[in-house]
Image (cartoon, rainbow over all chains, first blue to last red; front, side, top):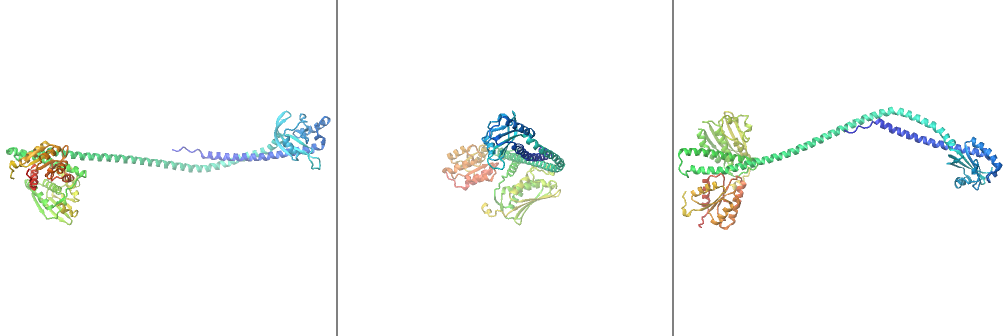
Length: 494
Length: 135
């Protein structure tokens, strides 16, 4: 969450007020400057008035020549005091061309040299009228004063001045108070104007800022929403990333497990095969009567052992095969295969089992061209299919094995008129360890590996399997194998 | 089958680290009329082969020490045994293993679990196919 922005009205009002105050201050300062200049002008005019109108005609050339003493000083005192009292003049000095003060309303200064002889006094003797603001001691008190230096010339001539008037006026009374009389009303007016302006501006400001604030808030809201959705997206992304990583990890583990499983199956199968080899080898020795004659009962019992060890061996072989197929290590020993001959061999091998169940086993072998394949594996396919057909066909039924050429495919079909496969079971037939419900119901033995192996071998040959079955009527399993591939290798392989 | 007379019984080398299978093979092959010398490891097989120069060797692939492929290769390298027929016994059903065995110089292979009579037949076929050089 971003911090709530401060109230905009207040901010804008503050800025506006500050700007207005600054403008007012500047205006006031300007007015004060003008007023002060004007007041100084008036003060200078007063000094002129005092010097030229009230005093000049009553002074003599001698008054500027040397320090005034005796009776003349008394006369000048009387004359100057009146002027000083009436005109806010603090002090008047008369200065001789040689720089000495010839007369001063403050007698202790008579005969002294003025402090700023080189500056203002010289400038005044050069004929210029000088105005200055200074802080000096007047009648024993320090005060801010407005000084005027006025050259005194004999009437009608432009010769060098006879002397210089130096007049001190109280700055506050002569200038500041006058200036203030102008400035104060202006200041008052300004203040009033400011208040009026503010009073007018504030509602407008408030309306404007309210609108701005609404927009601002909306923007902030949008930013917040955006930020939140961004954060959500980021979170989702990191979650997805984590999930992906977990999945990759899990996949790795699963692959590892799968590999271990394959390895385990393979190892177990190998390890089971070795002792089985011994068992069956020695059993054969005994059955071959290499170790002496067997009575019929011994032979019957040992044949049961042989049958079952054979079953075990097939199971181990199937397991090993499935493990290899799963691991993608199913390799074919390519060679020239005559499918019709293979079917004949298979039928011949299965004949005893068929005879045992009184099943009619028929071979309809149309000659087909040889093709490249793994003869042993394909024999396994046929054996599995015929064995299945015999298992799921009741006594007295019939099983037919046929081969034919179908364009660029050779086909072999195994049909029976047995119990069939339920529609619900059909899609799962090729799954490993899957047993049809009928097989389970009727306790027909099997591991559920046969068709999985058939499928793996047929697919390794790039062939296809078809199953057509009706419950109670029978099943036909067809295998189509392409013969186009690797034809040029046949001669070599053969 | 006409059993060879004991005097001209051919000497076969049989090597397998599984004692039961070794004895079974030996029994079957002796019954088929051969003289059998047994080896329980690849190294022993190689030593005996070079020492006794058998007419044929039946070698298990998976043995401690030198395996069947390696023994075969060594036999082919040696002048005395360079043409001695070799049958490999393999538990592996892989085509690549068969190819490996043939590349090493084996003449035939039999997969475990094998039928001992089938093995004896193969031995007979291989021996008949080659001129027997009397020792």
